[in-house]
Length: 218
Ligand SMILES: [Fe+2]
Image (cartoon, rainbow, N blue to C red; front, side, top):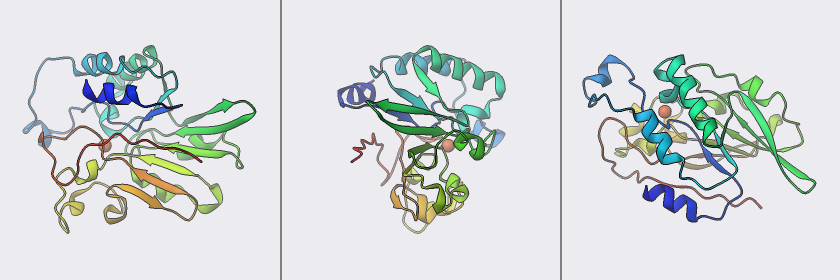
């Protein structure tokens, strides 16, 4: 809950989550390592997120959110919507203040029902654009003519156990040395890869602390 309290303290116009809200049951390899329980983790995480005070809340799904199948995925989306999140599923929406608007687009996870073209379809080319996509692999679909100003990703945990020259070999992304974590200057804008706040399988991190990221756009 301290994460929620920290986020609630921040003065902000928009709150976004770039996926992996829950941990999917994943595959048989990981099931051997993960504690199994009958607790309803989806309900627990929704209960925690319901304490966020912000009015503008948007989310894109991650691989774990889609890994347990369509039924769980739909339940997660439905519960997120009930507590005030806009779930951007290969879609976009503008945020307006006075006469000015920026566009937020979001994709589903790149291992599942990802559709980058559909996500960007209704975004005007000359608009200021923020793209939410769980995996940094989305950057392979972006060219400089699209002028996507800020692409927000997660997925990597910053390596979680970040051993120099070693950990990035195990990251499930195309270009781990570039997209391990942090801000990356692109020919068309910036990408930011957030280390997230959770862990996968083992409940510890090394040289990859959890983070809440605060952006001020000028
Ligand atoms: Fe992920």
